[in-house]
Amino acid sequence: MDIIEAKKIVEKAILSILTDNIKIKDDMHLVGSESLLDSMKLVELCVLLEELADENGFEFNWTSETAMSKSRGMFRSVATLTAEFARQSKAS
Amino acid sequence: MIIVTGASRGLGKSITERLTDRGEKVIGLARSPDNLKVQSLKCDVSDYNSVKNAARDIKKLKTPIKAFINAAGIASMNMAITTDEFTVQKLIQTNLMGTIYCCQLFAPLMVRQKYGSIINFSTIAVALALKGESVYAASKAGVEVFSRTFAREMADFNIRVNCIAPGPISTDLLKGITDTQIKKIISNQIIQKQFQKSDVCDLVELLIDKKALSLSGQVLNIGGV
Image 1 (tube, rainbow over the protein chains, first blue to last red):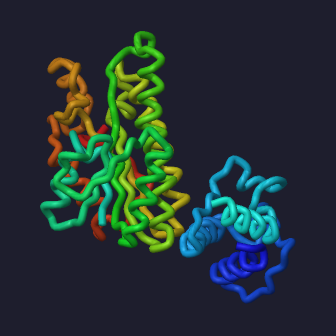
Image 2 (tube, rainbow over the protein chains, first blue to last red):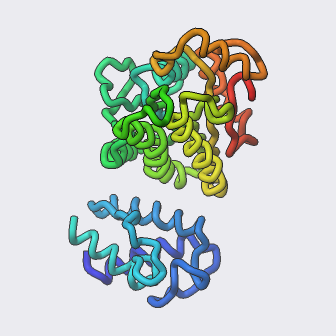
């Protein structure tokens, strides 16, 4: 899966979880005080991305040691999550 | 569908039989599942990858999970200073880590469906601080705190998490405890009688039932303390 396809999937997943209709930007935070998502919505996003990964034939692992790190984790922004989603699809 | 760990023996086996008898579809997880009378999967709860594989297989069934029952567990009755390092690690790894692994890896399957009941197992030895069960009780005390906290984390997803803490129920875990010790434990319960596996099964039935929708984050000590 290339980065463009990954971006489509990740943005669609985030939008389906959010109740507000907002424009998703690459630099939006997904963890921390300025996060787009609260902890409940973040769990929902993880589970949804896992399902979407399944549909695309790979396993999405969100439980790495640094996954939730505000400075290093995949959820620090929409862009980093997209990049990690694409990376995991290629690595499978 | 209801999933039961430790389904091949002891309380897990009794719970599996009870739920099957009442018409529930049960999948039993066990280290040696060959003789199980229900659909089963090999799973060692103390091994993260083994639990992960079992969760992956269950997910493929695409069947709603009504309840997950963490009945797998081991016991070793010894004073802390006479318990060897291997036994300490095994008790913590199976009872505490095993429960955490199962909750971590199976709860996401319930998150999407936005309902479910998780039942973990503690022991009355925690509340009574029973002499000679310090490491075992410590592993189960961890299960209690984990369950109460996890219940709060899962509440928004309509997933209830409770803990059953049996007293001296007649299972393999009771091997090595004398009748005198059993009587002493029972004398500390509010209801001073030895309860049976069927009493535990009754509580399991209650906790997975709609009648228990108001219960989460609770530790139910059988016999009372």
